Length: 517
Image (cartoon, rainbow, N blue to C red; front, side, top):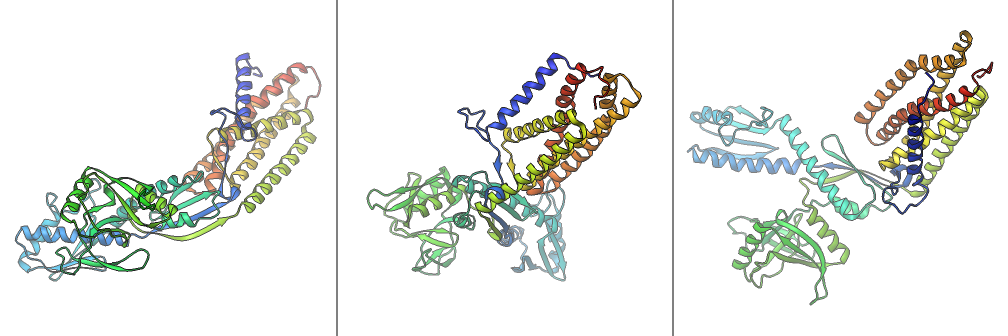
């Protein structure tokens, strides 16, 4: 029936006023944390930088295979089985054995109790494929293993990228997965991405190693270049300590030399290793290596057992800040390559906002004029409802501090069209009911009741499409589906509560009028 209780009327008014107040925070500044929320503008509206990063998993695969090569060698050595020609080639471990050991090796690889068993405990699927070719065994990653490794690398890289960007304080970054080896980074408001690119382009793999004078180091040695390209040094492959042992790193000014340095604090394990290494290495140079290049190589003068130290290397305060940031956020599991880069200037963003608002205003005005011409007073009710519908929609987006993009504006415009469509269906149905029903109250009630099924079915169908777009789509598609999905709920609320309430108030006072619509 066309009836609203006082409680329901109060609820509708309070809810409408509440979202009006929330939406107004985008135009007014309130000294209130609750009313401090605002709609964020997306990259296409605000301007900023877009980076698509690809994870290079080749070094990770080779490192894992190298580690597994050592495991295989040691495992069979313990069992008295001599494997020959063990090598890593084209991401494959290749080795040969005598015929008498072939079955024994196969059994070991497939024995769940063996340390070289290659089954995932959860999925019961091979991480590696073991192929027997004559007297050779070939071990390489299976498709399942590659997928698992890429997924793991992507998850780790995503977290590290987020930490680095958050440390800089970029406003509302959007960091998303793409496939299983790419990461999308959107940075609204940032029109100079050089620093971000520099930070994301570094793996930040930090190691502390001794400088050696010859190539006869028992752990092996390699020649590395200083970061500034000034010199080279032969460095032991033995890693005394890695960046994993760092608890904190901060840029500082050395009071004695007035030089910018990076001070660091170690965890308990790192402090113990560092103290032992400096105690036995007094007089030696300790190379601090970042991503294969020597940052500095100071001479150890005394034992450092405090669990803290410093890195010097002719830093500016900015470069020291960035290095400290990289060390704090941790090393990437694999190198990142920038495969796509776009920069949207703020002027272009303003043009997009202007164009979107103009399109919304023009569409809104045309709809208002049509409805007024078609349904007169009830058209006015519809137009008031449309305005309240938009305010509630903007209020919800503001409440959750959603990011608005051009496709999001398109979703709002579509919401206007759907709201009008619902009202047209109702009013046309009421016209049909008035032809057979003389009682205006009953005709209006029947019109709302009988048109409900068609309206709800249409909106549910659209909502399902919006949900699919949200979960299957990305970026702009998500923005469109989000505003459209929220718009469906605000439309149903405005049509069946606000518009219906205004209609009831008018019809109740003019129930004996011959022609209401």
